[in-house]
Image (cartoon, rainbow, N blue to C red; front, top):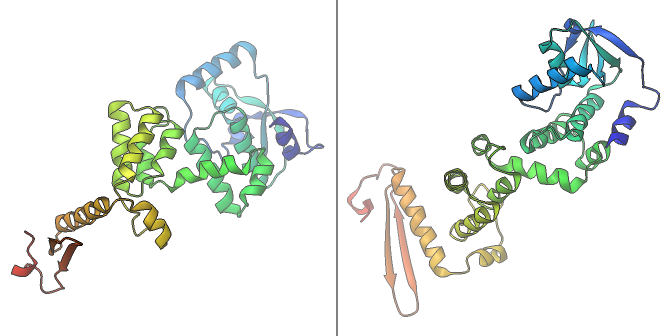
Length: 286
């Protein structure tokens, strides 16, 4: 990883270490971290106070000031200590290069949560249209590893916000992707918290739930072969229809369903009231 960082900085860009006033330094524009642990910052500040700043930060010119490229934690720790200046290396670079270096430094130090890492990859891809393969080459990660992180962002935002990465692991979160309704995903997250489910227990719960629900309309349409693989049991299909009708009633739709059994068939008839015909006697559910 360090070789990749050195390559991004450039073989001839190892500029001299200079002292820059702290009030002229701005936080990184592309910082992938969403937060900085307060206790860790205090510990780092204590270390710098005892041993000094062993590694200078890296900045780039930003108007009349400078913007941090690498070393924002060290910068913040020095601010906590009340220092007026900080050792830095000045590098001229564009946004693409700056963002890649900031991401790589955090990956190198294993400081990003899996959510922060996923959003950082998404940012690089969507902002500059950087193909995952090229990004993988630049930051020294495999395309498969990046793809795994990006898949997490398929979870609805409110589900993402429910997940505390210090409690629920990335494997827990990935298991949720097998569920095709937000309601089931939310239910599983709550049970992980309440019952302290392991990854294996979570996967087993997801498997049980996934057997009883058909992909929603918002998912990619399944072809007949895929449908036949999912609907392995006619009873599951029947239960799914009943559950759909039940939920429709709960939303206020006038819907009526009858069932008829014969020796060869199980027949279901569903009637839904047209607009203007709501609450008619025939449309009332029984």
